[in-house]
Length: 348
Image 1 (cartoon, rainbow, N blue to C red):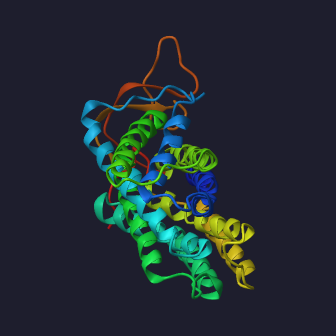
Image 2 (image 1 turned 135 degrees about the horizontal axis):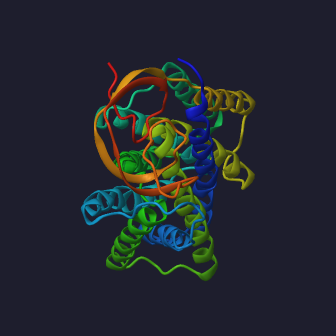
């Protein structure tokens, strides 16, 4: 093991996604009162649609292809239709603090599915980091999150939402090299249409203008911007590590819920904060290096020519990030790496 460089940028992106998502749960609970779960989900992902229309200054990534639509549709069904409805149902029946802490299950489910489905490895540092973050949530939950006003049915619904989002995370992992804005637009658009159709079929009440504005804004930051950044993090460090660092979001959500009067923070808060800081450090400082083989490959994604893997030439030379279809010859070498598009090999 050597060097944490390949993990730092991805870790910072994952933390940024967690910050954007962290405040969403208490805001949904506050401004979603009296609304149906599918109406809330539709408004949240309408915000994500609007945010995805904001142009990015990044190099132009490859667009999703027709063959990618079934994968995006599955992610939309799980993450943009079922998950927000389950979250809204649970938030109506549990305290904001308790529900925010239950969202930590997403990290566990994502890491497990990434290991089982796509063969991602979790190193010792990342495993310890995940354990530290889960322990931090348990400290807060046992101290104050699961009081008598947090019924079990609500918490189970929030837990089911985290499983749905974990399926979404792993489903979209192979598309992390594509333009994140267009992936979010397709996923959020499908989720919005399905949610509003379900809300109409169930005759859910129409939202007031203030609630509409707040929920759409929450969706733009917590579901649109957060997913864009989350996909960029997955591109660098894979689904398991990104999901593990995303466990910071429930911690932030619990704190914000307490500020809004939706729960209380006990004396374990400082201990939990220290554990979360430790977990984030272990992820960012992780190193992973061994001899591995890259098979012959041809694909298209955003890349640079100073990363040791993209040695093809351009006339005239191209500097910085750019995207086009390119070829890789078979090579065996050793260097620090993360679970990016070029390092999907399995580990014993």
